[in-house]
Image (cartoon, rainbow, N blue to C red; front, top):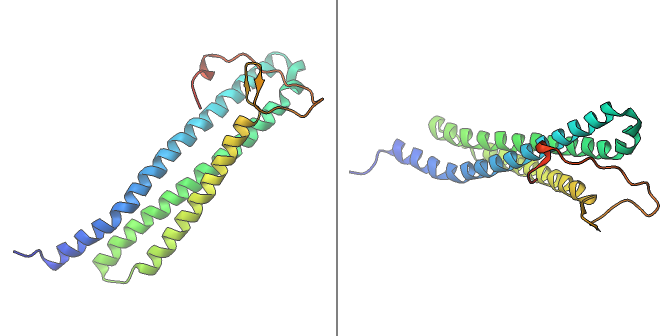
Length: 170
């Protein structure tokens, strides 16, 4: 017995919605990575703030690090916002696919516009995330090997010993 036309239409819409659902899964994974990095930045800022509160005379030494942490915080926050916007637009694509099938209208233009918006938002989020990763690794010190540091003659910043909350990878 052939399926009813309404069921075949819904089955087709479900097939069309599978790719955006997988995209939502990927965006969710990216949001998880970004929120972990954000929490590490916040944890480090709290450690540095505690050191400055304990000895205000060291504040100038930690100012460059705090400036970098604030910049990273803003970049990650913007990236999280853009990823979230992308996820919402993708969810809109899925909803309009089903509405178009149920209400019988051509959903191709709104779906295309939402999908394009989602891709631009995701691209911008990934570019901001890449910039944050670059900033995080720009002053990385590995033992005696400086990956990249201050310009010659620049004053070195004092770095606190990591506490238990600083252990782990980002």
